[in-house]
Amino acid sequence: MQLKKDKRALRRQMRERRNQMEKQEAKKGSHAVCMHLLESPEYEEAQTILYYMSFRQEVDLCVAIERSWEDGKKVVLPRTDPLNKKMILYSLTDFTQLEEGAYGIWEPSARAENKVAPDLVELAIVPGLAFDQQGFRLGYGGGYYDRFFAEDLPLDCIRMGAAYPWQIVETVYAESHDEPLHQVLTSEGVFQYHKLPFIHKSSP
Image (cartoon, rainbow, N blue to C red):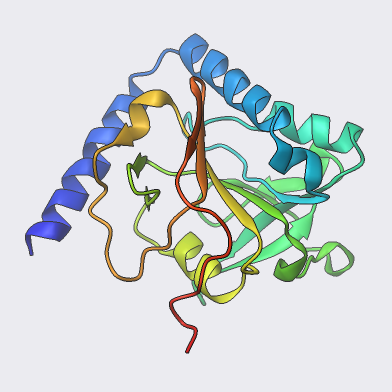
Protein backbone atom coordinates (compact mmCIF):
# COMPACT_ATOMS: atom_id res chain seq x y z
CA MET A 1 0.00 0.00 0.00
CA GLN A 2 1.42 3.37 -1.07
CA LEU A 3 0.43 5.13 2.16
CA LYS A 4 2.49 2.69 4.23
CA LYS A 5 5.46 3.10 1.90
CA ASP A 6 5.25 6.90 2.09
CA LYS A 7 5.07 6.71 5.89
CA ARG A 8 8.11 4.42 6.11
CA ALA A 9 10.07 6.69 3.78
CA LEU A 10 9.21 9.76 5.88
CA ARG A 11 10.24 7.96 9.08
CA ARG A 12 13.58 7.08 7.52
CA GLN A 13 14.10 10.62 6.23
CA MET A 14 13.31 12.24 9.59
CA ARG A 15 15.51 9.81 11.52
CA GLU A 16 18.43 10.59 9.21
CA ARG A 17 17.90 14.34 9.56
CA ARG A 18 17.75 14.06 13.35
CA ASN A 19 20.88 11.91 13.49
CA GLN A 20 22.75 14.57 11.50
CA MET A 21 21.97 17.33 14.00
CA GLU A 22 24.85 18.94 15.82
CA LYS A 23 24.57 18.62 19.60
CA GLN A 24 24.56 22.40 19.95
CA GLU A 25 21.67 22.73 17.48
CA ALA A 26 19.66 20.17 19.45
CA LYS A 27 20.46 21.82 22.77
CA LYS A 28 19.57 25.31 21.54
CA GLY A 29 16.35 24.13 19.90
CA SER A 30 15.30 22.14 22.98
CA HIS A 31 15.86 25.12 25.27
CA ALA A 32 13.75 27.36 23.04
CA VAL A 33 10.91 24.81 23.00
CA CYS A 34 11.02 24.61 26.79
CA MET A 35 10.84 28.40 27.06
CA HIS A 36 7.77 28.55 24.79
CA LEU A 37 6.14 25.87 26.91
CA LEU A 38 6.92 27.56 30.23
CA GLU A 39 5.57 30.88 28.94
CA SER A 40 2.30 29.36 27.69
CA PRO A 41 -1.06 29.76 29.43
CA GLU A 42 -1.55 26.00 29.10
CA TYR A 43 1.50 25.39 31.29
CA GLU A 44 0.45 28.06 33.75
CA GLU A 45 -2.99 26.50 34.24
CA ALA A 46 -1.94 22.84 34.40
CA GLN A 47 -1.00 21.18 37.69
CA THR A 48 -0.31 17.66 36.39
CA ILE A 49 1.83 17.48 33.25
CA LEU A 50 2.85 14.45 31.22
CA TYR A 51 6.39 14.75 29.84
CA TYR A 52 8.76 12.29 28.14
CA MET A 53 12.49 11.62 28.33
CA SER A 54 14.22 12.43 25.05
CA PHE A 55 15.77 9.66 22.99
CA ARG A 56 18.28 9.98 20.14
CA GLN A 57 18.22 13.77 19.97
CA GLU A 58 14.48 14.27 20.33
CA VAL A 59 13.61 17.65 21.84
CA ASP A 60 14.94 17.50 25.41
CA LEU A 61 12.40 18.71 28.00
CA CYS A 62 14.59 18.45 31.11
CA VAL A 63 14.68 22.25 31.56
CA ALA A 64 10.87 22.35 31.63
CA ILE A 65 10.69 19.33 33.94
CA GLU A 66 13.01 20.97 36.46
CA ARG A 67 11.04 24.22 36.30
CA SER A 68 7.82 22.26 36.87
CA TRP A 69 9.23 20.84 40.07
CA GLU A 70 10.19 24.35 41.18
CA ASP A 71 6.69 25.57 40.39
CA GLY A 72 5.11 22.82 42.49
CA LYS A 73 3.55 20.95 39.57
CA LYS A 74 3.23 17.17 39.37
CA VAL A 75 5.59 15.76 36.74
CA VAL A 76 4.39 12.53 35.13
CA LEU A 77 6.28 10.24 32.75
CA PRO A 78 5.16 7.16 30.80
CA ARG A 79 6.46 3.67 31.29
CA THR A 80 5.89 1.33 28.35
CA ASP A 81 4.28 -2.09 28.65
CA PRO A 82 5.46 -3.87 25.45
CA LEU A 83 3.33 -6.94 26.14
CA ASN A 84 0.06 -4.98 26.08
CA LYS A 85 1.32 -2.08 23.94
CA LYS A 86 0.20 0.34 26.65
CA MET A 87 1.71 3.23 28.59
CA ILE A 88 1.48 3.36 32.38
CA LEU A 89 2.02 6.69 34.11
CA TYR A 90 4.19 7.40 37.14
CA SER A 91 5.06 10.63 38.91
CA LEU A 92 8.69 11.72 39.10
CA THR A 93 10.24 13.98 41.73
CA ASP A 94 13.90 13.44 40.83
CA PHE A 95 15.87 12.20 37.84
CA THR A 96 17.43 9.50 40.03
CA GLN A 97 14.05 7.71 39.91
CA LEU A 98 14.62 6.86 36.23
CA GLU A 99 15.78 3.53 34.82
CA GLU A 100 16.35 2.18 31.34
CA GLY A 101 13.11 0.91 29.82
CA ALA A 102 12.15 -1.70 27.25
CA TYR A 103 13.26 0.37 24.24
CA GLY A 104 16.38 1.85 25.78
CA ILE A 105 14.50 5.00 26.80
CA TRP A 106 14.77 6.32 30.36
CA GLU A 107 11.51 5.64 32.19
CA PRO A 108 10.22 6.09 35.75
CA SER A 109 10.65 3.12 38.05
CA ALA A 110 7.44 1.16 38.59
CA ARG A 111 6.69 2.11 42.18
CA ALA A 112 3.04 1.48 42.99
CA GLU A 113 2.86 4.55 45.24
CA ASN A 114 3.91 6.77 42.30
CA LYS A 115 1.37 5.46 39.80
CA VAL A 116 -0.82 8.19 38.32
CA ALA A 117 -4.28 7.79 36.79
CA PRO A 118 -4.38 9.16 33.22
CA ASP A 119 -7.52 11.18 33.93
CA LEU A 120 -5.47 13.43 36.22
CA VAL A 121 -3.26 14.66 33.38
CA GLU A 122 -4.16 18.18 32.24
CA LEU A 123 -1.35 18.78 29.75
CA ALA A 124 0.53 16.16 27.72
CA ILE A 125 3.80 16.94 25.92
CA VAL A 126 4.68 14.27 23.38
CA PRO A 127 7.57 13.47 21.02
CA GLY A 128 7.41 12.52 17.37
CA LEU A 129 9.45 12.12 14.22
CA ALA A 130 7.32 14.63 12.30
CA PHE A 131 4.16 16.72 12.64
CA ASP A 132 1.91 17.92 9.84
CA GLN A 133 -0.27 20.90 8.99
CA GLN A 134 -3.38 19.19 10.38
CA GLY A 135 -1.91 18.49 13.81
CA PHE A 136 -1.12 14.81 13.29
CA ARG A 137 2.16 13.29 14.45
CA LEU A 138 4.36 10.60 13.00
CA GLY A 139 5.62 8.25 15.71
CA TYR A 140 7.79 5.18 15.52
CA GLY A 141 5.03 2.78 14.51
CA GLY A 142 4.19 1.21 17.87
CA GLY A 143 0.94 3.13 18.29
CA TYR A 144 1.53 3.79 22.00
CA TYR A 145 0.56 7.45 22.02
CA ASP A 146 -2.40 7.12 19.63
CA ARG A 147 -3.77 4.27 21.74
CA PHE A 148 -3.18 6.27 24.92
CA PHE A 149 -4.93 9.33 23.47
CA ALA A 150 -7.92 7.32 22.31
CA GLU A 151 -8.40 5.05 25.32
CA ASP A 152 -6.90 6.66 28.42
CA LEU A 153 -6.28 10.39 28.21
CA PRO A 154 -9.21 12.60 29.31
CA LEU A 155 -10.99 14.60 26.60
CA ASP A 156 -10.15 17.92 28.27
CA CYS A 157 -6.39 17.24 28.37
CA ILE A 158 -4.37 19.45 26.05
CA ARG A 159 -2.00 17.54 23.75
CA MET A 160 1.16 19.30 22.62
CA GLY A 161 3.92 18.04 20.37
CA ALA A 162 7.55 19.10 20.86
CA ALA A 163 9.55 19.53 17.66
CA TYR A 164 12.39 21.20 15.82
CA PRO A 165 11.10 23.50 13.02
CA TRP A 166 12.23 21.11 10.28
CA GLN A 167 9.96 18.42 11.74
CA ILE A 168 6.87 20.33 10.60
CA VAL A 169 5.91 18.83 7.24
CA GLU A 170 2.97 19.05 4.85
CA THR A 171 1.62 15.62 5.73
CA VAL A 172 2.53 12.59 7.85
CA TYR A 173 0.08 10.39 5.93
CA ALA A 174 -2.34 10.09 8.84
CA GLU A 175 -4.57 7.03 9.04
CA SER A 176 -7.98 6.53 10.62
CA HIS A 177 -6.53 5.47 13.99
CA ASP A 178 -4.20 8.47 14.30
CA GLU A 179 -5.13 11.01 16.97
CA PRO A 180 -4.42 14.74 16.41
CA LEU A 181 -2.76 17.27 18.71
CA HIS A 182 -3.96 20.67 19.82
CA GLN A 183 -0.58 22.36 19.40
CA VAL A 184 3.01 21.76 18.42
CA LEU A 185 5.80 23.68 20.13
CA THR A 186 8.94 24.47 18.14
CA SER A 187 11.91 26.75 18.76
CA GLU A 188 10.22 29.28 16.45
CA GLY A 189 6.90 29.37 18.25
CA VAL A 190 3.60 27.57 18.70
CA PHE A 191 1.49 25.97 15.96
CA GLN A 192 -2.19 25.95 16.96
CA TYR A 193 -4.37 23.31 15.31
CA HIS A 194 -7.40 22.28 17.31
CA LYS A 195 -9.39 23.49 20.26
CA LEU A 196 -10.98 21.43 23.03
CA PRO A 197 -12.73 19.14 23.27
CA PHE A 198 -11.77 16.19 21.09
CA ILE A 199 -14.20 13.33 20.65
CA HIS A 200 -12.40 10.00 20.95
CA LYS A 201 -12.76 7.79 17.90
CA SER A 202 -13.76 4.99 20.23
CA SER A 203 -16.72 7.04 21.51
CA PRO A 204 -20.24 6.10 20.35
